[in-house]
Image (cartoon, rainbow, N blue to C red; front, side, top):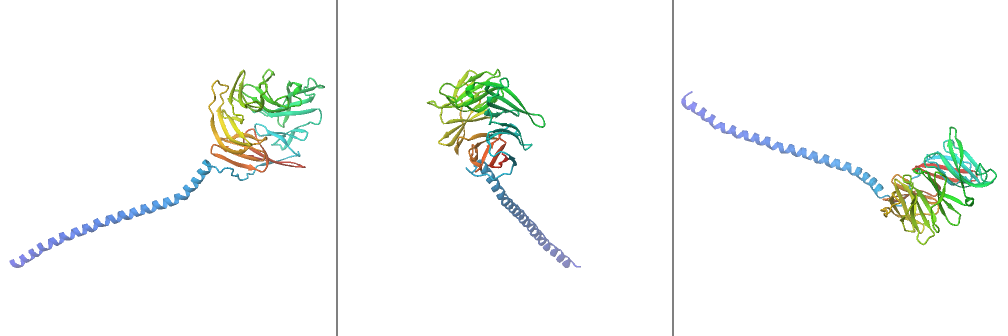
Length: 395
């Protein structure tokens, strides 16, 4: 190879080097452009799955919101679906003043001229007293802590110590043993003036062992207290007609309404201490639960307000009232109330209402009924010539 040829080869080699260096940046630019496309692809996937998750959560949140709304804002006077319960058949053409024991095992009631105690577990009557003779039951009430029934009775031989004489007294019928046995114990003789009276609002204070009851049918409706020494004491004053009462299980204070005076009031009495806790003549004592006294304002046949005050009376200072509920549910002479958790159950002649700070609604209606002392059960019953069909429903 001569010098000229060698020179041409070197020149050609030098000319081709820049071309190679120009090709490399093109390859690098191609690689750099591919990365943004990959990031965009992943971003699209994230957005799609996020939208899918949101769409799936919408029905779940809708259902939860409906449940919360039903709890916070219950439909006023909305009827509850019927619930199946235990059924019992009583061989009694009718039942009057049915009362259930504290543990929901026994039922005391009147049927025509008979006074009976029924065992739910055995589906049978374990006590029966015929009132067609010389004896008559004036009133009765189960004790709040055991299966013993206090019975107010009038007639010949009520006091076992005087079998041939007219008397009025208090018996204790306590259910003992297995099978059931009734232990009948005479407790106290009452004045003969009580023999044509009706005894109601019977309450025993477990804190003080003081017994309270109201007597209807005397010159006025009176409230009485019986202490552990069996001393009888009237608590209301002349002109004060007792309407309803409740006894504190902790302090032993008795709260009661008066009517017939120029200004109706709610009083609290404990020993020699006596104070007025409310002065509205429309207020009525409903019950005492969770160490709070519940007062209801009843106006023209309707319960329109419920107030609560702490169970700390009698106290020289006026109690602090808290508004529990405002609304409108019927209230009649047969109406009673009980506490179910945080809600108040109000039973009228043919309906059961649930009342809470969020509103009120009908739980049952169109049937005769009563509530258990514990507040756990609702009893609906129907009667005909053959007997009484009773259904026990858990609340």
